[in-house]
Image (cartoon, rainbow, N blue to C red; front, side, top):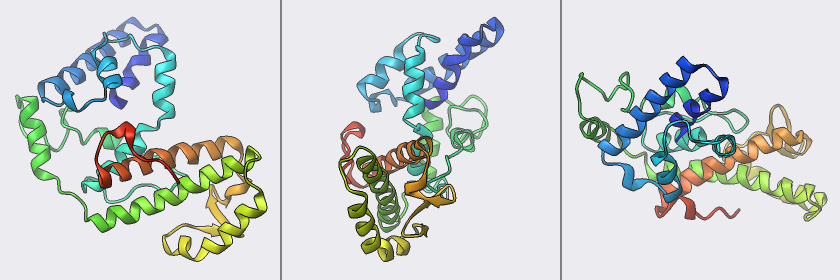
Length: 236
């Protein structure tokens, strides 16, 4: 979904040559998914989108996918299968490019070891070489992600007038030691993001941390609980 979305918007630039090349990339990646036998793992909405013709996604679809911060979930999932050693801090976005380059639908993936490999063989080569991180490591990562998600939600409640600032400040004070022990940076009694206390963030930065934390916590909870991706419990 992330790989295709970057090519779906090319047609809006009205460069016919670039649009044709993008269509070929879209068809190639989508065909790989089917040939690898992985299409059954898609959500219904994903299946419908990926079955559509190249260059058929509208701007609102591309905007929704961008807002979902899919690379953040990818980074968390890859950390859970030891494909990456760490994810960025919670005020820094994951770089999608090196993450996508690991996947075997691209010829320079480390799991594509020779020319002419069938997509299913490429996928099986990847599956055979990865290993799941220790559950305690995933639990610890989920706890950090959950704390950042809680902080984002709590700030939204304050801004909406549904939670008194003084009440939130008291909760932060009571939980500061535990949060610090989990690796959360603190400044003047609050989480630190973008070099300042969370409560001081401009709305656009608050939204950035909120959507980033939501994407990561969903991924970690899915790894721990299984089930459908869109049914993961997202309570704080």
